[in-house]
Length: 258
Length: 311
Image 1 (cartoon, chains in turn green, orange):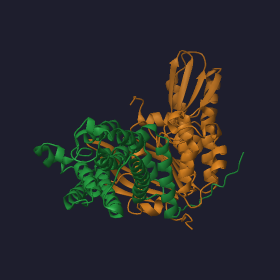
Image 2 (tube, rainbow over the protein chains, first blue to last red):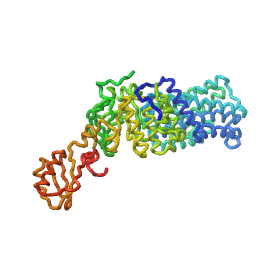
Image 3 (cartoon, rainbow over the protein chains, first blue to last red):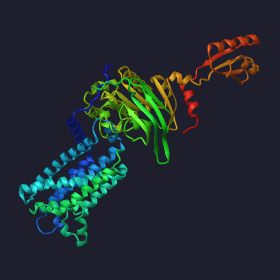
Image 4 (cartoon, each protein chain N blue to C red):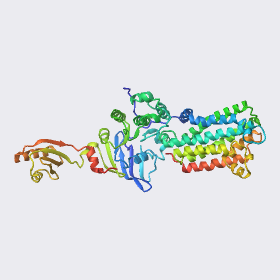
């Protein structure tokens, strides 16, 4: 039998090492989870390819459908990772005592949060890169050049903050099964009618005023405006910030770690 | 380095009160754990064991009373304490899709000087299921992974919440061996259990908890014999005068003829009592058969203290 030296030698690993380990663990688990990959990559890619012919189904308005649909698909990718995927994963981490287990380890709570943010950032970078490249191959002609892509990053960060805190708000208060149901339902509802893929101008007036106040409408429209070369628009940015701050405060007050 | 200070108790709980809604889980509980010892918190289900231990682990804020762990506050000094304290949760504690090795390596990676993961895996006999996802592990396998995660960071104090629940006898003994080895290495262990033999075998100190309070404390031997109504059973011809026998025996000794010819003496059983019994029987011309001295076990004591009602 192997002799183990069990004598005490306590100590926390260096913070960067802990964070690296945590992000790597989250990404490994994600890459092994079929449903998450479907949600974050397969569905957006499918919709992007189908979207090139979307004008035959839905009237998206003036312009080429690929130019209208691609920014919406990028918004959808942000939604899937920062909201649905995060909420479901966190809900089950609470259920299975993972958050509690890590809470008993030297990893601080902010380290757990940074680990999640790091994993989300890595996934979104992969998603946005892949979807942009596929979009370009399908004939997408973004306007605004490098500035537009820089603005996309700003919108993606704000959108992630808004959707992510909304996701944590749900995951931190509801049971895991309820979180799963709500997160998927919200994903589908926003995908179909949340102003994510279809330009706000195509909605009836009354609906438009509601949708532009939703994070999905703000992110979708902000990205469409950006890649039309007009910049994201202050209104979209303010809407995303307000959602992020409100949901973030809600999370801070209500999140239960177990 | 964080050498355990010898003069500071490893754990000190004073008048802890914890309520969930209208239910009082812990009701003025106090206990002290000396460094380097194995302490068992023994109690029936719902006695408040897990709540107490989770408060020591910093998962819950005391509603009243104080808790000090290694001389520190489990909540406000949490960051300092976490690396020094190993925790085994009663259940769960891993991503359902994480493999056993992977999970253990991950926890190890959060510590500065972790145990050698492969050696620990071998020591706990986990080689057979290292690549199995957590959700497919049996209850006992999950328990062993959980124990491994508690000690991999080389803590000076470990809390084990029902470490052998659901284990087969071999795995139970392996866990006991490991706890003994932890003590030999200078690690303080606090464990909860409702197995008497576990508390009796493993621990230096036992606290029996019921209805949120410590109702008895001591070494397993002292507890078992305290209030000790040990018994002597003997058989002889039926119809002995038990009252007369009782007068011959020390005060506080009871004698009953439980069935014709079967007698039970309850009291402080010592060699003098046996000698008195023999002498009395000889005087009465009675031949005793099958004299049996029964030592009270911790289990008897436990049931005596906590009652036999099911919870």
